[in-house]
Image 1 (cartoon, rainbow, N blue to C red):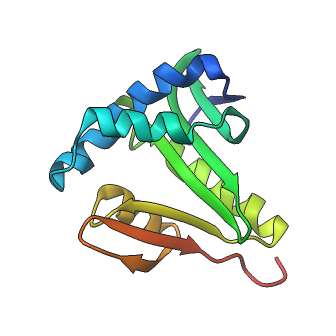
Image 2: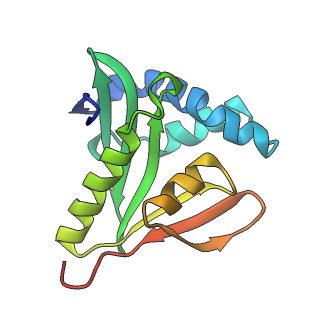
Length: 150
């Protein structure tokens, strides 16, 4: 059964709630690598926030997640994909990634992203066809290649 949720474009007024979502969603992975610094995580999101490229995910009118997909000179960059812990494991991330891959394939674009090395997120993206292109002890750069002639 497909998960039920709605989407809407982000607005500047969403910033604080999205920062809190990021902190909650990223905390376990960042703690695992000894890098959970709430102030740094908050500032990084604030500095990158672009409502025009961000989509809010809602269930029963409540914020359950978000993603930000930015156009780049080469491909698309999935800067953020956060699902609240209470809604993880329900297939929401899978639906979003499938939709983003279909959009990228239709445009003939690849999708790039960065994940925490050896995190649940990295394993999730590998299951969905992303491959590592660079890594260090903390982060892994990944890409999903759009099929030729998609």
